[in-house]
Image (cartoon, rainbow, N blue to C red; front, side, top):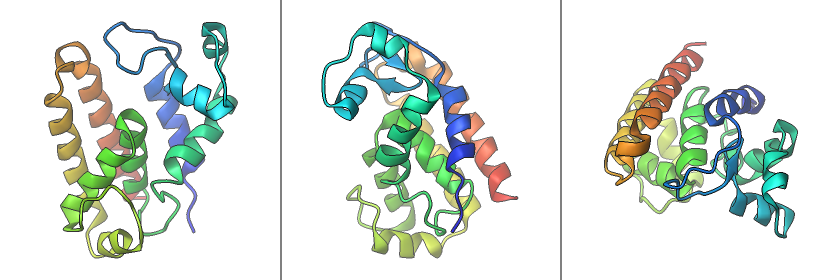
Length: 173
């Protein structure tokens, strides 16, 4: 079984950056891509702004592994290198359901947002590069439909393109 988590986490943290609290971001206070709500859920209690500012990669890595990577089944060999990164990055950026449903629609599965054996069986019947490219298109279309695209669209588009390039490189390795 492959394990790209550490490599993908490093790329993810490069996308996410440090502490932000943009007034138009529905996620609110965020550091290293982890929102205050996600971190409070993780530690099972309230956290201060300083707690959020003090987050380090070693604090958020386990969150990303359990709540995103594992839930998307990214270590399953069916989600090939590159496709795992495509799914993981979009999952972190927009929630697990959205990329799961997009992948399911692309492969002709029931789009219920749950990656399980039936979805993985259908994924195995598709070319990973084609899936990566179609996930890129679906993600970009999603972004362009958001009311906050005027504010955040340039960054989301850059991130989506970088993820596509990285994913295709990983698929070719």
